[in-house]
Image 1 (spheres, rainbow, N blue to C red):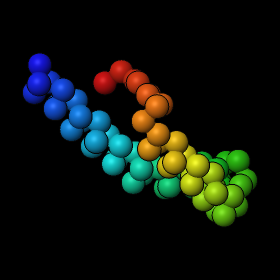
Image 2: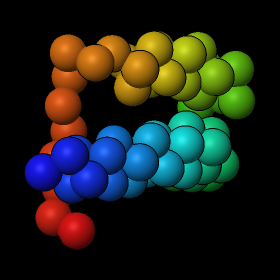
Image 3: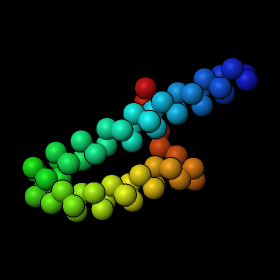
Length: 64
């Protein structure tokens, strides 16, 4: 069971790194081109998104 827990931790860490590194590009395209936000407005939003993503009390799940 220990290696399964370690594997889940490693997978979760890689998932977090991938999400944080790509969220700016995806968000900028969506919010500026489609919703008409300014790049500065998107950056302000992303500050909170990154903070919430680091919150260990929030658990997001989706099928893999």
